[in-house]
Structure formats: structure tokens, C-alpha cells
Length: 78
Image 1 (cartoon, rainbow, N blue to C red):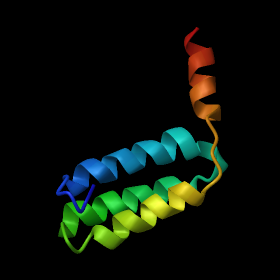
Image 2: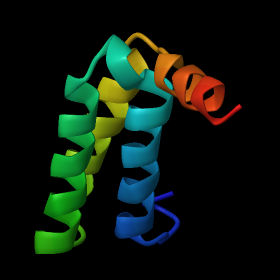
Image 3: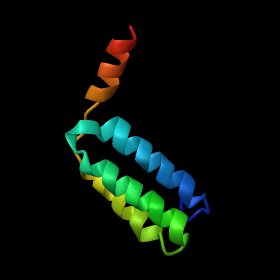
Image 4: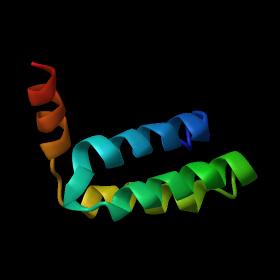
């Protein structure tokens, strides 16, 4: 996505969402990585933030996954 010219802030926002929604409580540090990547993109932009985004994506991809928060939210809304 970065190579094709997509906005790095959009990509970083999606990584933040993935870290909180799909990784969740299984590895709370994933959200820290994702937010740091977003901040790097907002602060320094491309091409310098490319490695920060890559690090967050790789971290989230390797992290265990949990949707416990989504399940709890859904149960509370019923």
C-alpha cells in the first residue's frame, strides 16, 4: 500500500484499528506499537515513517489474536 502511494496516515489508522480489534488483550503492546507508528507518520511523513509502519504491521501480524473485547462489547449492548 505504501509503495502504491496510499496515504501513510490511513494505513497507520488501519493498523491501530487492527491492534485494538483483532489483537486486543492477547498482546496489549500491539496498540502501543501501532500508535507509535501513527505518530511517526504524522510527525515525519514518508518516506521516513515507512519502517515504523512496517514494524507495527509485522508486530501485529506476529501477535496472538483475541476478540474478547469485541465479544464483551457486543454482550453488553444486547
